Amino acid sequence: MPIDDPTTATPSEIDEELARLGIEHAKATDTLNGLTARVQRLVNDGMAEYATELRPRIEQARQTIAGCEAAARPLDAEFERRGGWTRAWLVDNSGRHVHRTMACRTCFPSTRFAWLTQLSGHDETEIVEQAGKAACTECYPSAPVDVRNRPSRIKTPEQLAREAEKAERAKAKAAKAITAPDGTPLRTKGYGQIDTEFTARRSYADALAYARYLTRASIAHHRDTIAEYREDAQLILAALAAKHGRTVDDLRAELAPKVEAKWNREHRNWG
Ligand SMILES: [Zn+2]
Image (tube, rainbow, N blue to C red; front, side, top):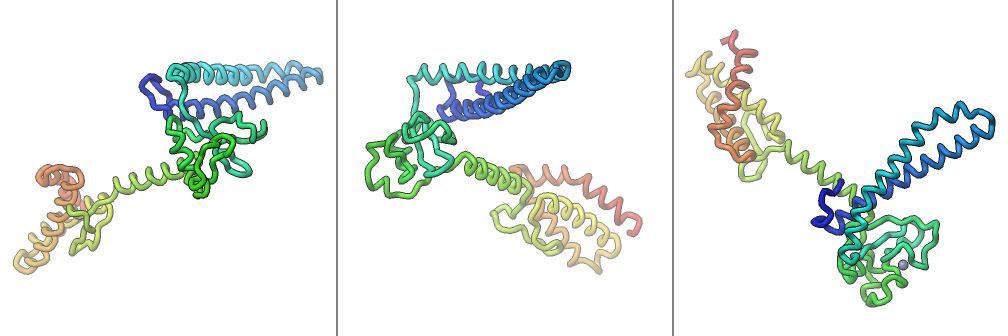
């Protein structure tokens, strides 16, 4: 996410944005290199007129690169202004070691790194603690032996992204869910256990419309059933009120048109 004010951002926030810009920059550079090579081939083959068609895409790639560089500048400046902070990288290929710098001499130009931006600005002891046996001995020579014997607890950017996605899904599910005000399942007599707010609202309207229908048909004959449906409606109303921190009266008023619609649709002409 673009950072409005680098001076108030955390090292992780700044590095996360720098990592994102770095990936976008690398992609645009690949595109630019590919297009430039194609233009060169076309020119060599005497088809320069086709090369002009590629110009807008080349220009766009150049603009993306310039944009990434411009966006990274204030973030790099902030890193310098604060006198730097700790950073850690995980090597993607063999060994899966954690390094304090991509310039580590145990690595190669071809080494693929994943930037562990979640650890940016954290104490080196904490980084080593999390890395355990994955801590590079060259980068963290002072790591105690007992720490080096522990398994790594480092999470890759992919793992973190998956976890965030999972949390997001759980949140969306919770937003749709409903329980009794005390957190136990919402159990009703006429509709069984109700798990979603959607079903709760629909069941509420159904219960009251049906209770009204039975009242019209024969209040004496259906007394117990009517009471049960009204009770269900009360339970649902209380659950909805608790979930949204609103009053029962408030929700009853909100749902009244739904009850009315249900009544008109299904029962009025039969009563
Ligand atoms: Zn290293």
